[in-house]
Length: 118
Image (cartoon, rainbow, N blue to C red):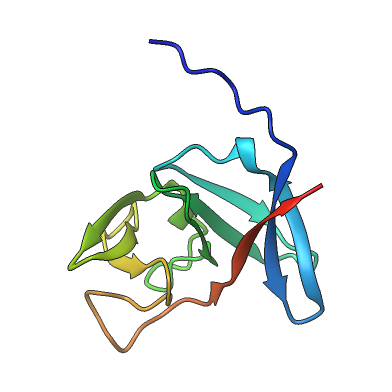
């Protein structure tokens, strides 16, 4: 089965201290897969879109290894909470809060994300 490409003019925006920052077009985010994006201050964010069309953004740096890899992790849910598991050591990070589900003393920054019509 072939899926028709999205034809909307929606963009993905991330809330930063300075205001909303346009990251990419919505069609660039495939449900269930992450994408890394560079922010104006040279940090990286991992963006995710789930199958219910909700958007999430967390820091892309794995705090256990220091590697910028969270966008390449596997997504899932645990107790109703969406998460991404780091592809390196497999720690799971809550996509809404950035908290580590396997070690509550560790977290990554989480960002507000929205769809914005052009």
